[in-house]
Image 1: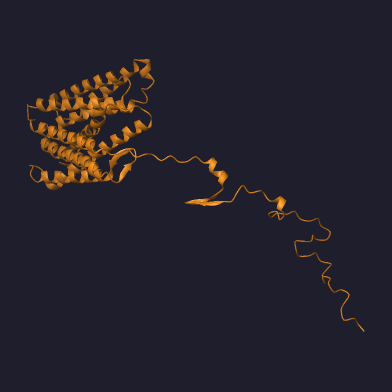
Image 2: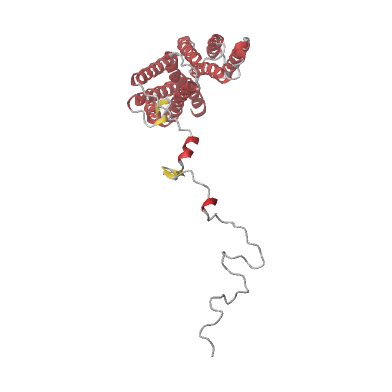
Length: 349
């Protein structure tokens, strides 16, 4: 009789084949190297500490905090309401003076308007040279003032009303200003960095003389009235809005709001459209087209001046004269609106 249990009980029926598990190696072959994480406690890398979650990112260990520097928050420059109101009043007075001066201009009687333009040019030279502080500041200021005189005389005395004499005056003034900066060795080092500032001062001075040329062409005086009124209203409304509601802030370092820029440009365009319905040679549509360009360029130039001043302060440069720093924006706005008015009058009227 056979026993109830076989002698092979407990043995693998396929003992001659290699086991399928990972605990025993194949017969006749060395054990394969381990590729997974270590199972024993001694082979595991020691953790530095528990990982913790942080807001907006993956978890990190406490030791990782020392490797990262904390981010510095840029403080917002406060908006000073009395200052914004003062700049708004200056922009309004400047626009009124230019518009009324254009009404005094006539054939053979342009010297009063040229005198008003020259006064504004001197204010521009004072404000922009004191704000930008180019090398050989006195030389640049004197050359710019002389360029203003030459441009005004050329605009009044030229046989044909055009911009070519003004372009020659701008090129000559820029070259003389650069040569004046190259005379001294101390100023020579900074000439390359100040070429843009010197060019802005000289070109801005000559830009005001385009108003004299514009007053000599048909519909020029009406175009000056429409464009400069739109620019003045845009600058006035933009600054008043910043005094009341400077929101949303365009940059923490610039005390200006987007609402003032947009509302100022819109109301300036609306004012030019209303004037176009009363002036001879204009319609509300054509006046609005000319006015929107002047208003937009004026407020954007004023805003760019604020960004430039914030950049100089962040670079560590000392602040400039208080009066010159805040006159710079409206003067730059009208300086850019003047050639824009000439271009719109020549191309579209």
